[in-house]
Length: 477
Length: 90
Image 1 (cartoon, rainbow over the protein chains, first blue to last red):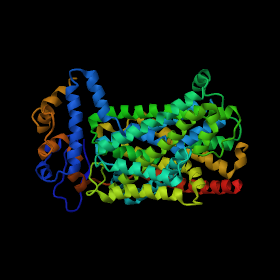
Image 2 (cartoon, rainbow over the protein chains, first blue to last red):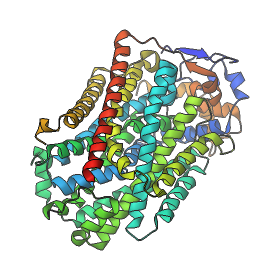
Image 3 (spheres, helix red, strand yellow):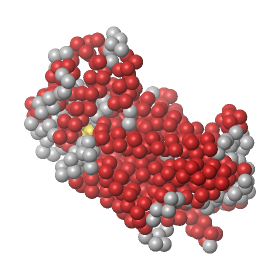
Image 4 (cartoon, rainbow over the protein chains, first blue to last red):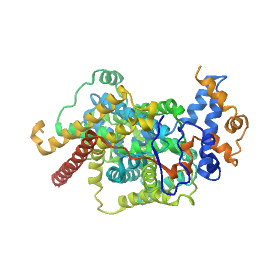
């Protein structure tokens, strides 16, 4: 594999070996011995466990495979359960309440398939280059395009982070918790996750929290959905949504924005790098991403089904926020069901707040060339942790400011995510087709076809939204 | 399977392979650390090197500029939409 590398000014050596070679065998090994850091040691420990699981798994493959999966699962599941965040779950809830069981069930699954196609590419990029997405864009396309890309990410991430704390406040608000205490509790959880100084521990804590996204499943079961109707909708994409076409278009856009967003690309690639995944782990990384897609799409469908009683009873949920949905469905799914729904919104906000603030901090560290790893102790990478916590605190504070334009943010966040996605996908496709970087792991024909199709679909969805906004009567709205 | 055997054989001589047999790796030994990481994974390598800038083709530049204009125009449209929604709400 040919690699294009330049030494930075002041570099003592110029590595030119293929990345798959162990560092100990590289020409720079003698210099590297003196430069091993805490982060390297932590990552080496993770690699040792993976190598040992592979080695031990030779005899009894099934158990070894499970152990290996347990070690390598993480970024894919986290990114998809993180993207099942508060505004996303509210979009799904609004979809169920407005249109019931029908077209949107298979459509949401389609959006997750689009997400899977995109996220699989980030696994390969991270495992092969060992660089985060922001770093690669700056390296390969220069500062001009790099800052554009970062502008999209920073704006989108901050607005999304605000909506996560709106979700945290709304979720706990159902139980009568005061907004300041709810938001404070959210910040404490973000802080608890990052003070471990270890990527592995952070990942397991966040995965432990993320699995509570499954609370939407019992909430859906308590709504007693008609399973034959669900099966029919999944197979036939009917009944089609009827009514205000502008509203339908907005929900389509919101549901796409609930699944395919720029922060996911930056987050998963950086997490794959921080986890220390290597090209031989790509298959496991794909499995991790598929697992995340399956879990997140199941929970999203559950959120739709949980609010279907509102559709059957003709309750207008157009302006509902998190806690209002829980209160509105309580007569049909009971207090336990409504409580699970509210806790689900709280969890969705917390996990996404952790993942998105980490995504911003990774990009910040990569672009400024500062330490950017959860394997670094706080004293070694304090700007990284400060940015992570600072972005979370700023978003949390905004939620508590009286008369802050929260409605504006909630209205726009998913739409902005969809609109910012095509340029992010263009960079992703250019990078993953860069054979100098990717070698044999570059995209093939089908990968490119899928990637380009997703990009075109997103552009069309955005243009449809734009046309409808400028010419509202175009769709008869 | 045929491809995997030579790799395992090759690794049998490095410290990383020896570490696999131990219950706990001696990560204070930098040789063990470097044997478990790829050359590009070591922090010192990453901080001292970077991938060179690639030359974008005319088509790629047009694509990126086109998408940039698209985002700008769409953001203006989102603003219009939100202003309408807020005024409509009032």
